[in-house]
Image (cartoon, rainbow, N blue to C red; front, side, top):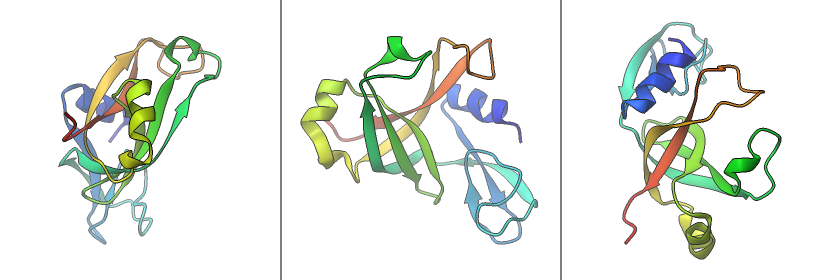
Length: 138
């Protein structure tokens, strides 16, 4: 499975991971080997696209190439199937600041959003970022 396939699927609302045929663990995003046992015996599978925020941080002073997007909040989400992925929380910074640490443990659904490419990004045609929609907010 190629990284571009992972990002294309995100834009279609799907999260594609890999299931190890040796130990049964899931890996996401795609890698050459299983995160658990190191096997290369992997098959592409569609994951639930649901998970839980485990940690997050808000970037107010962005690195070169991302200054127009700041502030933004990056989170690590543990997917229901086990692997952790990084992406952005799809909420305004002011709302994230108000919620604070209550976001830890919040349920999210994953989707992809296209952003303008920048000089340091490998794909010069487009940049797809995993996004986390927080569930259950009023």
